Image (cartoon, rainbow, N blue to C red; front, top):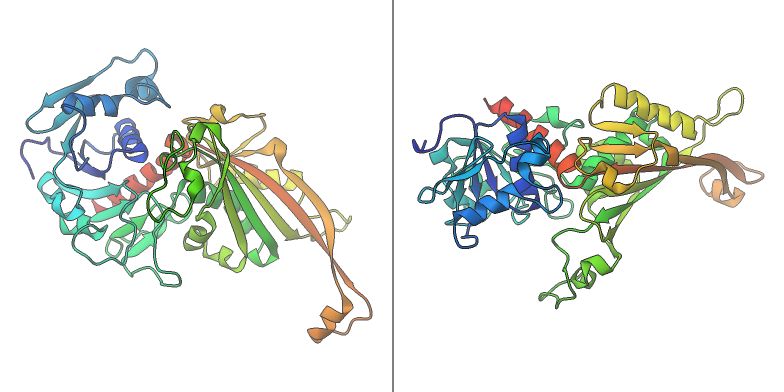
Length: 413
């Protein structure tokens, strides 16, 4: 360990974009780590003072001390050593690395780092065994576990390596095995919120009773979009992301449904459709979840799933096993109400809707399946629509990523 860096439990963070910076903020508040080593991989601005300014301010959430500690909090940010790249934020030491973007060259071992969060979005293939420019490069440079702040990107149909796992806090984080798992994905903001939305429904009813499922995430803008219209890079497939971010709505894609199967395998039997609509706001997104369920009825002929019964499932989860991670709101919210709010997802209970209908299966179709039928078969179904808010930056995703990181690091201790 470098004796110029204070002793204690140190977190490594690769990248200082939206998730990287907010990850440091989150752990400053939680106090599990006594220091941070942050790799930028390059010089920023004209001096280390500019890096300090980057860390201490944010256009979405405000100054770090006010956001974490309140509007009257004292500003405590300083450069300790320009030579050593050492900062101090709210009394916590932060070492800045600027020499290399290659994880294998970062020498986490020197700083006593056992857990690294890679927030670059560049290294996402857990099967890449290359010692450089890969997630496993962090392991080669001394880390015990690396956590990617995005879903893995693997070849279609190829299973994850034995030492890899996709984990979401509150869903399957207890599946982490410290003597086995070394490369972890914390999925995405949308997958995290979606998993918490679906869990109470899956626990109440077998997945086989879900006939169809789809979602649209009304998603805040991200740094993959252009501020003004720009020329797409070579090979770009989605030209809409090069249109002016704050002048347009645009249809995009999301891998939330595909990633969901890694954390909730039971959902793999459901043909899940997912898409995204990017909107010109800075953070807080909204999942519009649509389900078609077999409409079982009680003795009085009332369908099992109704607006009331679905909201009661969410209320029970919010007060029980998903407490603090899922909330049911009876308010009429707008997106800014959820900015920075600590919950994986907040169900907009007033907008939960259901409607009972019928699917008619013709007699000819039944006979092709070997069923004797004189006429069509009518199957009662319930169409359900549920809305879930999530702060795709600090409040929901970084919160769950941070708690997952604490859990994994504690398992390594």
